Length: 373
Picture 1 (cartoon, rainbow, N blue to C red):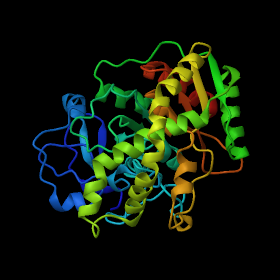
Picture 2: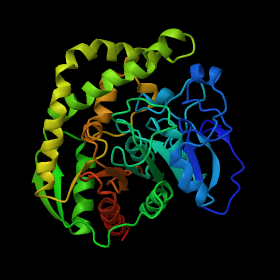
Picture 3: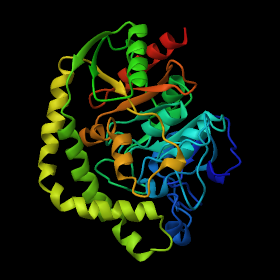
Picture 4: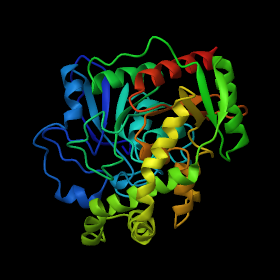
């Protein structure tokens, strides 16, 4: 039962909803996929505010789903509650940290799942499991009552099998949400070293959708440094003491990531001043194009058996196309697109300016329709 940490009866008349187990549900403990937190967790006194819309819609909450421990890594493995199984190949990572959320919708155990995205944690598992995901604008959806990782980056967003499911998920998170009537027309194609088959799949999807596609350049170093400077500082503030106090109840990968953050944090102190410059550079791009497009993952999901003892380089590679946009606070989608010669699809990431979720989902729907013809 590694997809779910806790199954619920799902009573209600609305859509089936799986909730990542770092979001408080009244009367239930919140573990964040961590043995250390599970041992001391008490039932939540109230729902996290992001659950209000789902309750009002009488959503059938089918359970609290698994995740990479403390939502810290993009792999989706978990030594305490098991690893949710990638629906395409059990040997591959499901992606994280919202691994259970992606697997629950991919295997039709939920219509919608809530995940969190701090450095790609909705988009990466969506890409690994062939489903759709939405990272929301930072601050749009309340993160009160959600176990933090790096609060300046943390967001809550939906995963679903298709774009229509993402729309429903946004309507649960933000009652009254509507999708724009018109999709984007002018798309900026961002390039970065990637598997050629994945790159080709993204290009073909954009061509099939009929967009005007123009090349744009992104300062990846500026974006990456901006993200790391925030992440390293805040993850230490949130989790360092927990890891120190519970050495036997925290996974080795988490201990290693905390050590890496401690090592990097002093060197990145100055980089935090670059964040406004990174945000401004994206704003300038959005003056010329409506959305950006690129592969969600530049590589195929690795095998679980191939995860190295020190996964730092793999983590950097998996998050390369996603985490910089967390530092900018902008929204982004991930959606499957066919990849020639592979049963596992590639994943297209669309990125918009702050508050552009309605445009992103309208545009993602056009892509989805085009690649299904």
